[in-house]
Length: 298
Image 1 (cartoon, helix red, strand yellow):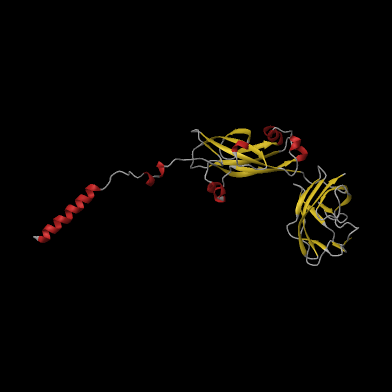
Image 2 (cartoon, rainbow, N blue to C red):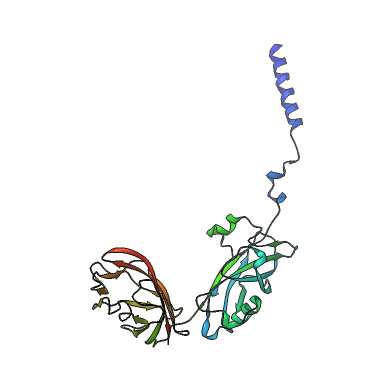
C-alpha cells in the first residue's frame, strides 16, 4: 500500500509540474526579433582617393558602398567633408545627399564640390592637404546613423568593413625634369639658412632627384660617390629615402660622416616646385632624429 501511495505521489508531482510549465515566452531577451535594428554601410571598393592638383576642380575622389543586409533598409546617404579630420558633426560641411541605389552605390566628390562645401576656391585645395569624408546613413524608416551615434567597436572592427568615414588627399603627380635652383625654406641640419639658393639635379634614375649639392653644403663637408638621392612615386609625389647601408655615407669631412636612417620620407610636388622632406640623419653613426629640409623652386 505504501508503495502504491508513493507512485501516486510522484504522479501528482509530475502532473503539477507539467501544469505549471509556461506556454508563452515572456522573456524578451530570448527572442532576437524583440531587439531593434540599426543600419550601416560597408566599403565595397575605393574608386580613387587622390585629388590631382593639376586638374583639382574636376578631379574626383570616391568610394563604392553596400548596405548591411541584416539591418534596416538604407534610403539616403549624406556625405560631409572637413579639411583634416574632426569627429564633431557640427564641424562637418555637407557635400551632397546620395540616394542608395543598391550594391556598389557611389559616394564621390570633385574638387569643385569639396571647395564649394568648404566655402573656398578649388585652388585652396593644395597638395599635401587631406580631407575626411563622413557618411551619414538615413534609413527608409527615418533613423540616422553616423560615427556620433554608433558603437565605436563597430567602426574599429576591420572585419565589419564599416564605411562611415574615408580620407582623400591632394597630390601632385611627379613630372620630370625638376632640376634647377631652389630657395631654402627650412633646413633643420643648418647647412643652409632660409633664403639661400641651392641646386637640385635630376636622376640618377627615373623619378629621382639628386640632393648632393644641397646636403652637404660644400663649405662644411664633402659629397661622396653615393650622394643623397630621393625616389618619387610618379602618381602621388610622395617620396622615399632609403636608409644608408652600413658604412655608406653621402657626406664626409664635416669633420664627421653623414648618412640616412630608416623612416625618412617626404613629398615632391612638381606642379608647385616644392620639395618637403623629413630625413632621419645619422652623424658618425649617432641618431640625430628627423630633420626637415624644405625647398622651393625659383
